[in-house]
Image (cartoon, each protein chain N blue to C red):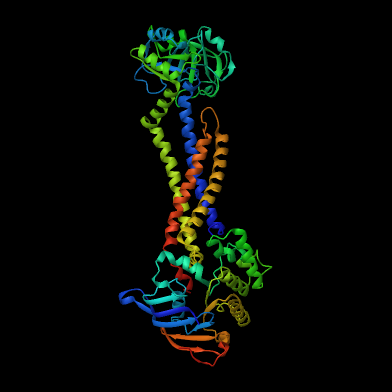
Length: 239
Length: 366
């Protein structure tokens, strides 16, 4: 199976000298195409830092990050926005929708950034909002949507550009158990349908059964890495 | 994104409107003053003016020999030439005290050089002994003038025979008299006059005729009406404090507007830093965000400038009088809009510098 993500000795240190904090120790991780991978662990374990390195919003202090065979960590800073736009869809903990835009315009935003004509962008956004069950809420602004609806808009925004990688950071954190599970189920379902590789950071163990692989971090290093029953194989170590 | 926050939007608009109103009002007043200083030359009907070499603007000063008038009339291409006398005079008020006027003496045979905009009386009556025309807006200041009123000017008794409207330069108003009376009142030497006004024959270019006259006339300056107006404007701008005074006020208005708009836009970006971070994280380039900010700045500038110009227009209408008139031709209005757009774009650069330094990774931090 081809790989979607490879982290090779990737580490991240914030600050310098005496105030330096190593958030992620040198880490090796390979995620095959299409595998539903959860990064889990307590707060401060380094899982969001690892997600940020994979999402090209941070550069590793040392080591490499390779996405779909492209050593993205070695690309120039100015190339990263285009890489993010082409390769990665993000779902953030706080949904991070643009308050002044309607649900439709929020979802159309990544397409507009790629230069897609407005009409086409809005048509594709409407189609995806319909797919996440918000076909009747196109004109609503984020303030008029429930937490679960906002997160579904965020999922639609992440996937509208058909990126091969979906990165979600604590997508259930601000939702109740039922809504949280529904949101992650939706992400998993759409990822399978759209052949996207989802990587989900969570510490919500009520949804671990939706993962095919669970990578556990503690103190900036991977301490456990296992496949789950959902992977269709025996439960055990992934490395 | 900035426009979503109504309070911030109102703050930015207030900055633009304030700057537009102050700059527009100052520019309008300044241009109104310039127009007052140039209106005589612009409206007198002469294509060419002959004057003492030291003359910088239309004002009383040295005199020239009336030989210049005689010789000008003999130059090919000259349709007509008429003398003009100009000098300061003091008018005694019935209640005591005195006021100044600028007395214009005209050649009654041609009546070149005014008076115009007559709102009362009759120009032909200037031919009567001791007849004068005054400015309507100055009637009260000159002691309640009416047609037929008698006044003493420089020791001469004169009678009011008419009123002009709006002939108020930046300084004492114009009063008009016949050549004979003006010479007496102003005590002009025999064979001396202030200006010679020249009309070019049909088909003769004033520029070429002015050069021809200059070659043939000694000890005088010969310039076209347009040059005289330009010289007057230059003189006011460069040799008087008027330009600096109004210019600095307009600049101050623009600076205050710049600071208000700049700080409000910066503050709006800081308030929405997470949204800008999100845009960066999902792939927006700095150029995209610059377009967004500059686009919004231009939109606000246009709206604010239009509101500001509407207010300036209302002010201009409210204060319009012969004494004070805001002159706001469309090129000035268009320039104001362009200046406001530039101001807002410059102000948005401060906000843009904050956005440029923004790390997309911040969206993953609590």
